[in-house]
Image 1 (cartoon, rainbow, N blue to C red):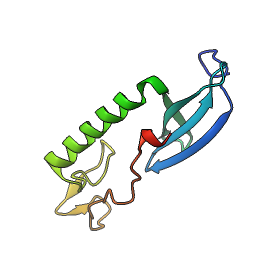
Image 2 (tube, helix red, strand yellow; image 1 turned 180 degrees about the horizontal axis):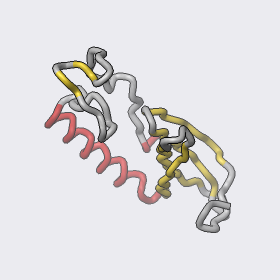
Image 3 (cartoon, one colour; image 1 turned 90 degrees about the vertical axis):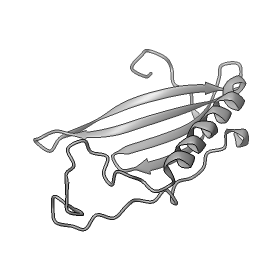
Length: 127
């Protein structure tokens, strides 16, 4: 059971996207009626000052009747971002406490822009 008391269904198909401190899980599960649905889980790692850590998870349940509209809106939103700002990542680091001084990070290393080329396009029509 998950933390809300719902019984989790067995995964039929699963894909993982690791992105820094965040991990995204795309899991196909089966309803009690025998149909499939998708869960998208974001898991983010938080480290405490003593070195211990914990994860915060957020989950989206996506059912077949919403795939087409969800995919269309996701594609419009991501296309808008790329059209407006390009594919190059503007902020080199996603940590809110990151500081860059004269093109170098606080450890003195040269900062290089990250690329989105390694990301996988998700097409919900394929599911």
